[in-house]
Image (cartoon, rainbow, N blue to C red; front, side, top):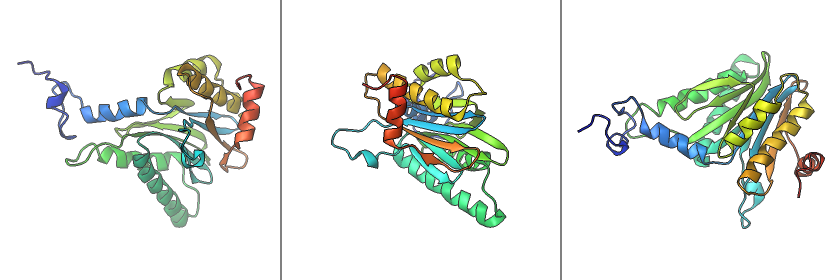
Length: 242
């Protein structure tokens, strides 16, 4: 019998490593993320832009589908994966941001709140009777240290990025970013690039171009969701509307 047994022998508890050093439940959580709606975060010299696909069923209220959340005035997060898991982590992030403001009388740094959420995610990979959070979050914000985008993994790891994407359209978006992203881009150009990436990712899967965009300018450090009509103007300008 091979020591490299089938996954079914090692995925019944999160605390059990397979002989080749894998935690299958973490990998299953990442597979859930890879099948979700595409999300995107891009930083530029003038701020941060967060974007997400909003695939809505015809019988569903469009306003009830949320992929981008405001954590504090200067920080937002885009989510992909199991939305119920995301809601718990978003609530924790908001409480932690407000606790930091009350304790230190200053807005929380983007990396600090990212690390706090990843600490929670990592905790759920090492105890029996629980499962990993089936969610990846892209944190974006502006703090005293500059403009930041952080990508997180279901295992609890995180890294800083100039641009980060997750979800079903990831490969399409990465290809566009590698060709067109520039660090010196203006905020307006970054918004247009975000719109283009998300629409192209939807088109590749033959889905209608319904997206949400949030902007955090470094000048104001205040997150703002763009209205649907404003996004429609960008779609027309880029020749992406039908």
